[in-house]
Image 1: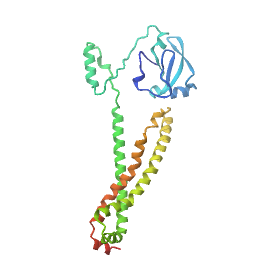
Image 2: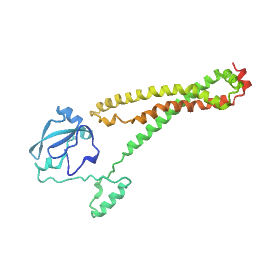
Image 3: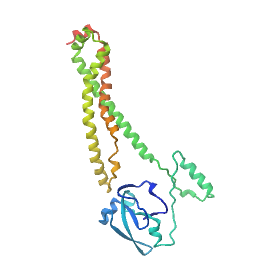
Image 4: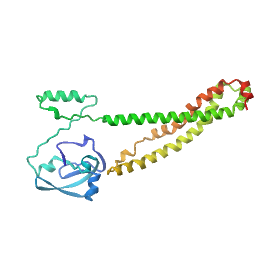
Length: 270
């Protein structure tokens, strides 16, 4: 049981359903708590505080796996009514963006006369280093996939350009400029890249919406809706155009080769 004295809605618990408690007699619990107790949001739960039974209503389901998902979050007044000698043992402090947690800890220690001690655990509302590393690895993997896709386009366009070298020679003999050759070769793959993006992006979004709940279920928790609705319409549009961009970039090298090729050599190609 964790009881907060004051507004604790900023502490970072993501709601899956219901709402954050608004006063004494209300609790928020994780998915696993509801699963093991057979309760649901809106039901009441009775627990003991110092031998005194306390009844509270479950008003929200939160995403949390600490303590095997058996945590209860409530207002200070819920427990204080049964235990008048209750005292806090932890202070949660939110730091403004850009504030150094180490500098804050030292300053707080000096202000308290050194009583902060070695047991202080100061954190900021920022991503954990593990998640920053994970996001960096995902970004690198995405970049590598884009490079591999570009190389695949490059290989395809090189083969296609060599097969049509004679046709290119005829076009150039009739007056097609090198710039027009580049545009024509890029257009060979641009349409395919655009169609691929339009098909792949909805498929990826659908896969994300399927896989994430399955992973969460394996961990014994639910998923907040905002974890699934993560893409804005303009982001989806840009991602759909990514196939066009990759195709255009991958086709630039063979297009430049075709533009520089001598007309006589191209006409002799079979």
